Image (cartoon, rainbow, N blue to C red; front, side, top):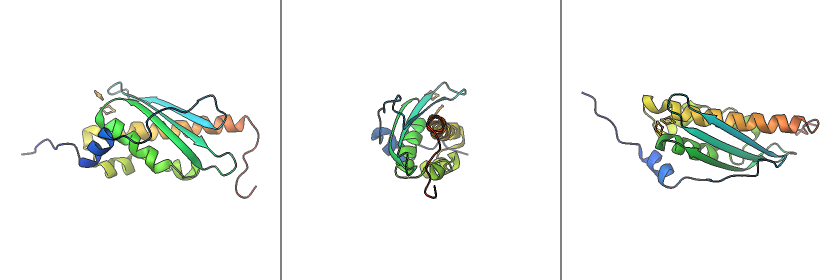
Length: 141
Ligand code: FES
Ligand code: FES
């Protein structure tokens, strides 16, 4: 017999006390915005990063999620993960890392997938905006 597990305490913690809720000015040249939706349930997540152009480090991050508790917890956790990381480090975050940290059950895996999609899409938006402003200055430039 299998019982429905209650939400893991980490999900409840992020859900009741989400980190980094809000928005950044999407028109700023160094802000990347990711807006993604989950076809399975219609939940929507917006995640924004503010990047230091010279170092490629994510200096600020905000999210807004219209969705289930697991989606809110996943996005909240991702904002904690990426703050202070380089774009390259942040682009390696996948839903497995999120699902594991939050102990998400199989039916909630797509919620963590949404958070992975959101950070990837925010990075892509920043990178394309950055590309239009000329070559990126990396550490070895
Ligand atoms: Fe209802 Fe995600 S399916 S909030
Ligand atoms: Fe769809 Fe959580 S149920 S994002």
